[in-house]
Image 1 (cartoon, rainbow, N blue to C red):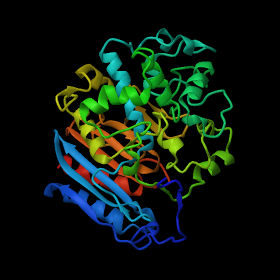
Image 2: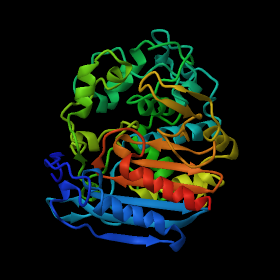
Image 3: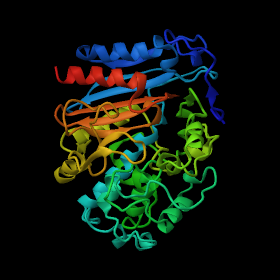
Length: 409
């Protein structure tokens, strides 16, 4: 199977020129860019050719403003060893940008009157009430204040990718702290919580099926969970700068909320394994590209419709773009803002424009997507080098800054 082994970074600390993973191969760049946004194209090229170990192997970047695709770029390699270039339709894991799906599906259920954001989750999901969770409201799941960043169960390595195991663990767990009392990023649980809730009102459909039928297929989104076999050949191989990074953080401080939130993670996961690609973990196992991210988020930045299909109503868009909590997160110790469903503009961790209503998600390693309602902008960045740190990273941040600067010019 292609890409089964994660590639370790060659020993090279050079911060200029090509990424060492490229082994000297010069990446090609394709696509188009409006001349007014040439700064974005320049940064994209620099990311692939001038940042050395902080640069990219393969990537795509897209900017859509008021429904028009202004920037649509892709380049580099989906897999260096196979000499497989990053193509127009290449997809890659987007990590926590995946959280977009559960948020949108739940907001759509609210739009359809099937879920009340102020109602207890247990009203729809009776088994969820066990062990003192009867007071958890739907809104607590949406804005990451549910107190369910980790489960009580002792999960075996890799079980965080198993739907049945995680749904059962969330049903049986007690709260980490009182729901609504503080912000605690639902690191690996958000997808199961929201998709599990939706499954109670959608006829029992799990995340992958519900996402495809409810949004991806009607909107023409090339975004997948439990990636179909015929899509697998289009996936990019993931390159980790330090494959042991999370393990070292967890082992150094195993009692922190962050370490506990990673319970059930496989320390040997390459993000190319079939287990990962076939998982329905809405918190991290989605696979897509920048074009799809930007198209979807541009719709959310405008009137909530795409290709003649209403994604969210005006009321739901207001929920998505209105701050409900801003404080230091109990899981990652960073100041964050959340609406009902999304991370919000909060530099330096989640810079998303110049306005307070900007919303989206940042993924581990630098994947990034957001909507800016003030400029009707949708932004997407997908890549296959998992950089260290938080937010859009050394390559995503200058792309965001260039796109935002021109959008507000």
